[in-house]
Length: 177
Image (cartoon, rainbow, N blue to C red; front, side, top):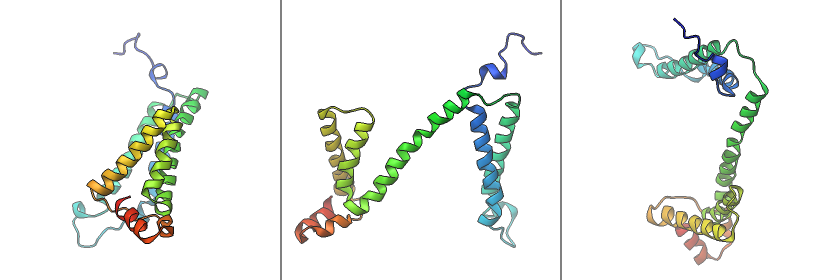
């Protein structure tokens, strides 16, 4: 028996659910439709041993759950608040773009210079605009580079910019920075 004082789905849903469910169902449908061209089923291999089994289960489960979510939201209509919430989600892509530009810059200008440019820029973007915070962020960038290259011995290729340095400085930068 249903409680008459219980809130309806429309009252308890958070903004953006219908848009999210639609986008998720679209992505799942794309994965299911592209599945045949992405994997193969091997002859003389048991069903449970097929390399494409778990991707099929995952994509099919995504689609099924997204459609069930949409069915549950069926009486809903997309409202202005849903679109406003969806625009907030897009803000996360800004930081992915920052990261992609950083990854693009490292082989060109080097790990140390890319870090010394991007860490203070991101600090500025996040609202840390005092001189002290910018100096601390640059110090953090240097510390991270020294930790990764010097202590952890992570192999990061030298930047193309390093080729313009004299040989001794170039070698130092490639090995340590």
